[in-house]
Length: 137
Image (cartoon, rainbow, N blue to C red):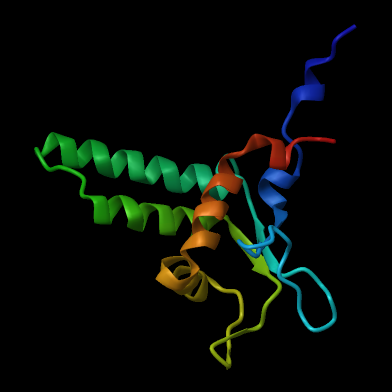
C-alpha cells in the first residue's frame, strides 16, 4: 500500500538544511581551521517565510502591472536577495573582512547582495528551490 505521506516535505522546509560553501576549483566544502565545513542553513522557498515573501512579491507585481509598470532586472535581483534573506536561518562563519558578522536580517541582506559572493548566492538560490534538500530521507 502506498502512503502519500511518504512524499511529504519534512520539517526541514521551515527549519532549514545546511548548504556548504564549495570551493569552485575542487567542489569540496570550504573548511575552517578546525576542519569544520563552512556554509549556511537555509529554509526552502516553500517554507512559511519563503511563501509569505513570494506572495508579497506577487501582489506587488500585480499592482505594478495594473499601473502599467514593468519589472526591471535590478528589481528581480533585489527580489532574489530578499527571498534568500527570508530563507536564511544561520551561518557558520562569524567574521566578514575581519569584522564580526553575526547572522541577522541586515547582515544576510549585505551578504547575499555582495557581488564577491555571487557563486554562493547562485547556489543558495538553487538550493532553496530544490525540494530534494527538504524531503524525508
